Length: 133
Image 1: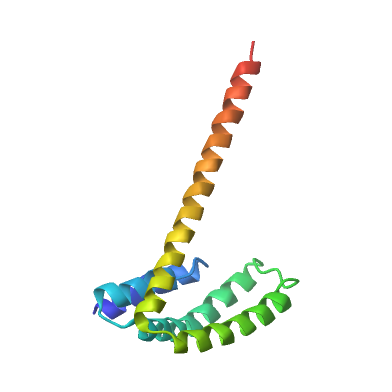
Image 2: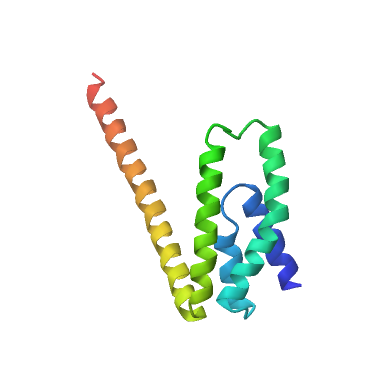
């Protein structure tokens, strides 16, 4: 049952283009007891059909810029081959720490970006208020 609920949550997030693996992998490893390499393999297997359906919807709604697709696709292919090879060489614990560190970095980056936006917004509002007679 928990795998089904996790899949629904993961699919919804992936369908919105937000990287469902960020949710699915921790759920599989922390709550469902799947090892890191197994979780990453399941994530990739689940990603294929979900990405196809989500991509179809985004193309239909004209949200895909095909001018970038070839370069991103080739780079992604090369990176995925290298990443899969490197993951196969690592112990589950090391791979899990790398994944966790990446999540922390991404979370910090997003938080910093949001804080920066709020500061800029307050500064602009203060400037507009100061200009008013």
